[in-house]
Image (cartoon, rainbow, N blue to C red; front, side, top):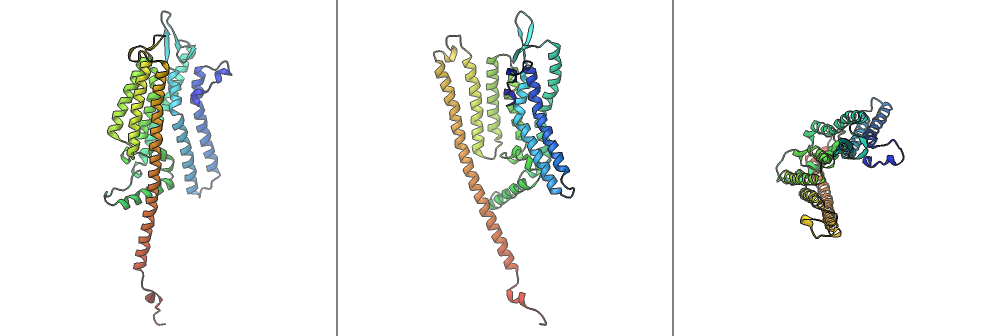
Length: 343
């Protein structure tokens, strides 16, 4: 959304530097508005309503984190593009690749670079803020250690953890950052955030499209090896799907690099003799197949979640029944309960 604002069609003075400023400032303005509303709600909440105040703080914290999570890759991508200049050969004139009307040697652009560098640093620190918030509650992000044989107790522990996630005002706003990962990888969303920034932003500074394609393919292979060895997700199907996506990213970048071998009349090199429709169709089918695979694994995951919730309900019902039977067994016989001495 932020990177696609086309205000230059309506405002003559709107160029890519203005777009970078607006893209960076709009989420910040929304963030300020979120916390201004929090201040008003807290002001009208009595000092004795401690739980309500904690719930209000949790709601606004979650809204702020979700906003930052959604806009982070796009905002950083626009900021990186606003710093990428090229030089006209033989003329020594430098211009912004994203907007050729901007002179990279002008005083205005030098001032812009100084300002946008600070904004870029702020946005790049957002995942570190995630890490700090998650670290504070990392000891509460896993079930108690127990034996693998006690399956029913494990289900009850998972149910207790879910209940804690919904009731704990510190865990609730962070839930989307650690859900789905194995307990020892509670921080992995921070790694994912920087990986998204790397692919969507840092690759734009690579000078030529061919090099950019092969760098992207190499990073995709590195991601494949890392995810295969680490397997950070709780569900094996999610780990398999994620590895497949890493292969897809690597192959897409490789294929894009091969598509650049075009002499104006047709493809050369590996794709020589292949028509443009065939080349586009192969890539379209390959990416569509990944969507189908993702839909299959998604349906499988939802089915497993439903079955797990049913097992949790059954285990909790059995636990309550055992506790009720135990309490009844510990009670005195009705005759003794009705006995009144010296009646």
